[in-house]
Image (cartoon, rainbow, N blue to C red; front, top):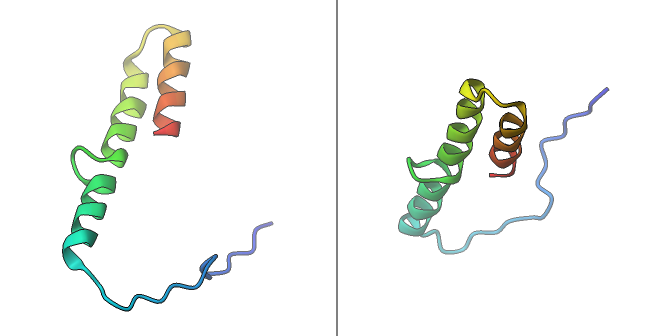
Length: 65
């Protein structure tokens, strides 16, 4: 059983928001060359891999990415 509590681990107080820096950070996570894109490419390539050892390797890399 899980208990979901929507609470931050540390309190955050943003005094001077910087939209330009925020855009750069978001593009690194979700952009075409970001971490999420790389992870999804590894995980989608594992389905066409004929060798089980390499399929497991692609899974591990995709999960870590």
